Image (spheres, rainbow, N blue to C red):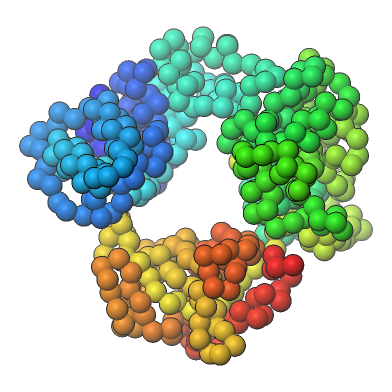
Length: 515
């Protein structure tokens, strides 16, 4: 298949906001896609490179290359070029990447070049995410979308399912079953503004602690235990204490969903990055486990004793979880049978407050009658977290790439220090609408004191209101902390920089990781 077809479909999907039209365009594309090329088509439309990071930055792409007169570049050719780029290393690598990129661009027409630039700079944003691509594949193969969705959740890979489905038709779906030892995509949650909103939306529900740990899926068959992350990476060898804990659980043929978390001497969670560092460690695992043990905390069971439990309502799955898993390894929860009851609503709010006081990040509110919809961000699980906001000062901004070319995008954010200077806490480009980008570009140009072609340093005068999920330690920034998941809520030109938040106040806040 020619890359030109992908570029054209990407433009068509970007040009419409109607989900039905997006699906129709994608279905037409997948009907013409050779099954073996389906994984590449899905990846490119979602803005992903199967090779991962290939070392190509904007400096390699900024020199224009004359476009080809007609389309001859295939997606197989494109994939081969990306593979070659990913393999470049050592002395002279920058020049070799430049040569390979120029060769690829020279083979591309102007529309293909525009698509390649977006793909290489992470700016493919036409809405063809996996959920919509799944619907397109299902329609192209004349298969029920619900059946395809279930196959993907059980297999863990839309590209693999799409390849089989386009090659064999709907009968290919019969092979996809939940199997102990094969990870499935985890069920995800939407966000609610508060506990009251979540209760009103769900009706009878359970309110559970939301732990700031690492999501894991534990499979056990006899003495064999396999542990997988949210992204379905196997990490069994890194968590010997979790493996042993799983072997002690009653029953067999188990698939359990939960988190692993590290606690301090008082039973409070340690900063997230310490748990993440422990789970990510591949060196001297025994010493790491002794120095910073983690504990599994389970909140769901997908299979037990040969039975698949995915379709059972949440209340029944939890009853099975309680039968199998001892209480210390189960998430704390409270059940709300009647959200209209003022006493039960008050109890749920009190549980939320207590969870925060115990050092956790919030709660998950789960409908008692909902099945386990693996791989979906459904409305039957709602997460509630406190929203932290800060007023910070813009210290610099980076020129954008792709569709943000010519706009100042990534903001360098600072808080006031005791001596009146500003201390950088991190960067963000999230939350900015096109209107906000345009306004801040004009304003920051007025405040600019230096522009090196990549970053514009500005007078510290523009205040922005930032929402963030918490703080974490960071040696990259002078205050020793940075913001987690920072996003811009609004510009505050009405507020002087002298009224921005101070480093001392931020460090003294309850969400500070400093101990």
